[in-house]
Amino acid sequence: MALPLPTTMPLLCPVYLPGQEPVPAGTSDWERQEMQTALKYQRYIGMAMESCPLKVVLSGGAGFALGGFFSLMSATFAYEDPLSRASSQLSAKAQTMHVFKEMGRNMWSSGKGFAKVGAIYSGVECCIEGYRAKNDITNAVSAGFCSGAILARNAGIKAAVGGGVAFAVFSGAIDWYMRKAPSE
Image (tube, rainbow, N blue to C red; front, side, top):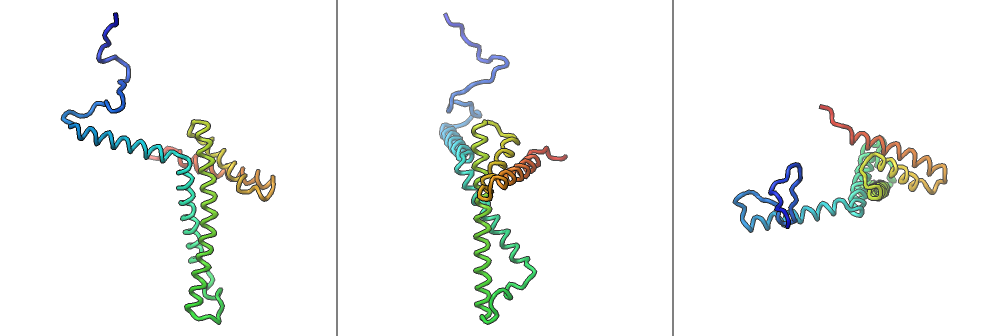
C-alpha cells in the first residue's frame, strides 16, 4: 500500500511539468496559452544566443563595424590634407572622389581585419567554454592564446607563441576587468 505524499514537503523545491506551472489567480486559458507561447520563444531566443555560430557572426559583424569606424576616424583625424594626396591636376570633384574611394578601401580593409579577430576569438572561446562547461577567466586566457597564435601563424613559431601570449594577457586583463565587482 502506497502512502499518500503530503502536498507540501519541507525543504524541497516544487517540481512542475512544463505547461503546468502555477499561474496567478484569475488567469484565463487564453492568457495561459499566451504565456506558454512567450516562454517557448524566450527559450528559443536563449538557445540561439548561446549558439557558437551566432556568436561568431555577431562578433565578426561588430568587429567589421568597429574596424570601419576606427579607420574612418583615423582618416578624419589625419593631420595632412587629404586632397594633397590626390593628384593636383584633377578637378576638385575628382580629387574628392579619389579621397572617398581611398577611405572606403581603408575602411573595408580595417573592418575585415577586426572582423577576423572578433570571429576567431569568439569562436575559439565558445568552443572552449562548451568543452569545459564553465564560464571563467581561464576560457578567455586560453582563447586569447589560441587566437593570437592562429593570427600570427604565418610569421613563424616564435611569432605565433609571442602573439598567443600577448593576446592571452590582453584577453585575461579585459575579462578580469569585466568580471570585477562594480564599485559602489
